[in-house]
Length: 385
Image (tube, rainbow, N blue to C red; front, top):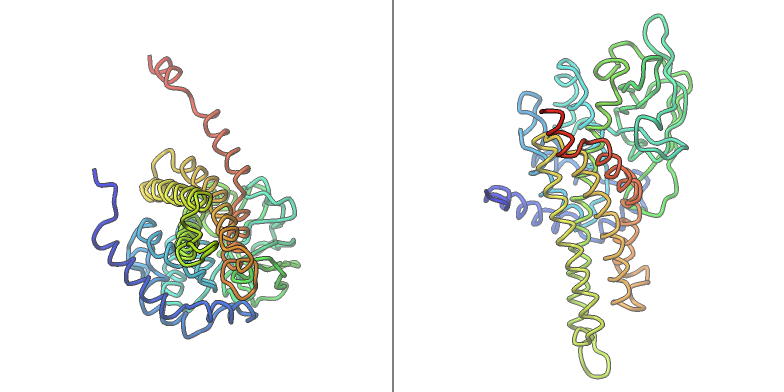
């Protein structure tokens, strides 16, 4: 069994790294931090030409037909440069929701537009209760004669202010239902929120008696909860890949700094305390990658323990990225705290990513519940006997 990436995947990684190092330097990231839209059309169009927006969508819907394991390779490199903009929200949230929950007609209509970069999408789930599951969905969708009327508020919706399509989770009489909503339609309003991570724009979305037709239901009415769980598992893995890339970049920056920064006439990297910090950072980065790669394989192959693998990866990466960036700042000393240095950009991205899709505590609880709900080997043998 081969546990490594294929030659094609490594070529994809190298091409992504070369492109992003050239097109997304920190000067661009800082410009987009100050920009309300959060991205530039020029870079967006170039990524679309490379086929990145349609990487994981089937060829019949205008995509490349690759798996989420291939997407992980690209997302790692995006995490390395802290890529700003709506790529993650479009491909790994909104577009993924359409792919997972939509019917054939909806996929045929929307996914080619997303894959070509002509439409942007996002997923609206989180509300005031801060739950990342179907129990947290309280926004109401009331049945009307021709469709539904939606009212409520969604919080921290990524890039909703520039999205063309909002995939919104709402509570209907028969359960949770996913709806396709045009951001420009009457009753929809988005407000850009002030958040710690300025590289990722988050919004409040208000729906005031938004009327949608029955055709706007993504999949089947009342069946959105199951689809939402699958979507979030895959989105967690995608975010973990980003986090691994960012953590690796922080480790590289820290080790390089420890080699050139001198104290008492010698590089600080020669001091045991610094060596221990860097060694611990390396262990966390490599362990986070292992957890992420396995989770990517699990969700790509739809194995039964995929939800467990995704939750375990998110729990570990949430802690690892935050701790690695914090240690990196400590090794850099005073310069690591300044606005001019890039360390704070990665630290803020780490904090933002930590709470997205639930922090480590939330995901460890999911792991515990999965373990409790699953029968032990002896119980399974007894039932089979």
